[in-house]
Amino acid sequence: MKGPFPEIHGGGSLLLAWQVRNRRVLVIGGGEVAAGRIVNVLNADAKVTVVSPRDGLNDEVAYRVEQKQVDFIDRKFEPSDLDGVDMVLCAVDDPVASTQVYKLCQEKRIAANIADVPPECDFYFGSVHRDGPLQIMVSTNGNGPKLANIVRRQIASNLPTNIGAAITRVGLLRRKLRKIAPNIEEGPKRMQMSKVCEQWSLEDLTEMTEGDMEELLGFYKPGTVPSLESLRLGEDGGAYDGPFLI
Image 1 (cartoon, one colour):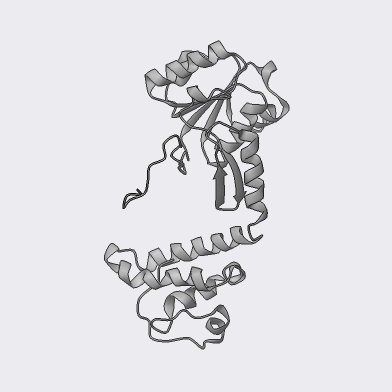
Image 2 (cartoon, helix red, strand yellow):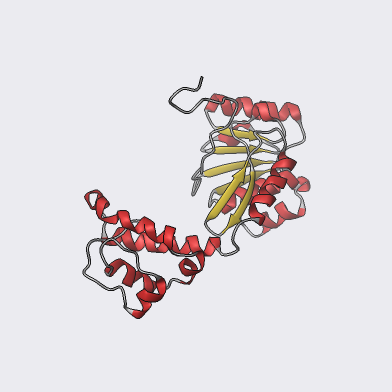
């Protein structure tokens, strides 16, 4: 018999949007897997250090080093490399060395991912679809990375082509809203802005200009959400009754 609350299904991972901006990430290794890891964390604005003998770098990692997109240490990993590090991504073809890295990270309480060794990972890299600010990750919890790619492609193929642009515009509108109503007690006044995302089409959200945003934040008929067209024609102007929430 089902209880009154959600059932627990163990064996999953806690999927999070981990903010690593300006955090120090150590990548051990310089091959294809390391190259993919580097792209992931650079896209998240992390500060990346790569430690690997130079002759072990593939073309992509060598390019990142040459362009100074990462800091580079030309030698094999040493325990002192963990000093001041917030995350470790190990991608070397040496199980013994990889396990040593993981154990050291455990001792220092540094989150680590040891490529292709799920039991020695504090977190996994899923298959990610990205469109501007939109990120969708599919994880199989280490069971089937190739299958995760197939699922991710299927999801991406069913998304509107302009969803990323629409989210970008909504984000700008939210930032403008926070300037108008920065205080927590103004929260109730914001509630109706959620209806903009519900009632406007993605095309409208994408085409919304900053001028449209100012009009939307400044005037509306209480209890209604003006269409983009009527907003531009000035048909839905009215006494300002507080800002919306997006």
